[in-house]
Every structure is written in C-alpha cells, then in structure tokens.
Amino acid sequence: EAASSASWREASREDLEAMAVEIRNGAEEYHNRLREAVSFASVSVEGGMRGESERCVTWLSAWLSALQPCKLNQVQGSKREGSQREGAKAEKPPPPALVASFEGASASSLLVHLHYDVRPAYWEDGWSGDPFLLEH
Image (cartoon, rainbow, N blue to C red; front, side, top):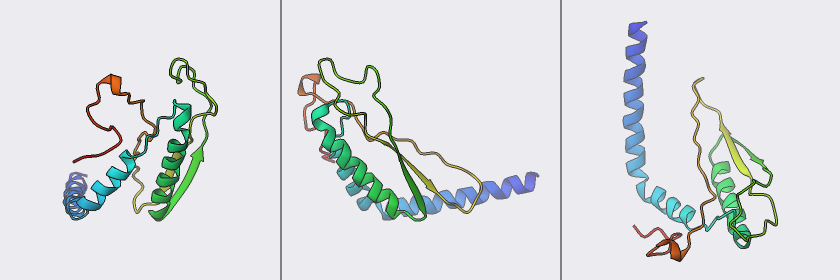
C-alpha cells in the first residue's frame, strides 16, 4: 500500500506542475475572462439589476457549455427571506444556480463552488472606484 500511495503522490505532483504551466500559458486569457465576469453588476437582491444577473447566467452557461464534456443544469430557487435591501421590492425569485457536471478519467470528485450574484456596492459604502471594473 505504501508503494501505491507514493506513486499517487508523484503523479499528483506532476499533474500540479503541468497545471501550473497551463495556468501560466493561459494567464492573459484567464485575466480577460475574470475582467468580463467582474463586469456584471449581478446584484440579485436589487430588482433593477435583475437583467445583469440574467446576462451573467447566460455568459456563465455559454462558457461552461463550451467545456466538454459538460452537463449543465439550472436550478431555480425561491425567494429568500431577508435577501432584499430594506425598502426594495422583490419582483422575481433569485437567478438560478448553475450546476455543471464533467466526466473525468478517475472516480475522484472535485467540487467548485462560486457565487455569481454579488452584494450591492454603493458609493456611500466607501468604494473609491467602479467595483465592476477590474483595473489590474
């Protein structure tokens, strides 16, 4: 068992090194993708910004669908209590959660969880620049 464990660690190190090379080679593309993702003012609790959340769902869905093989599902939630800013009126339930499944070569699983809806960013909260503009 110790031998198989050691070979797994070696393979894992090689995989991580290959991944690091891939990340360095694609850094500009990844930075551009992050810039585009940040540009969505996807504040799901603000009724007037609902369109931005929907645009973000469409963008994420297209990107995830391009990663093959991928099975993509949208799971619609219901209105969350306490999710609205004081005085705001909820017109629709929150945007859907996106669940993407990818077939892999091993039985191991990896879960990646992220939020595409963000908290409101008001100038009076102390922002010194546009919070939906990646400047670096």
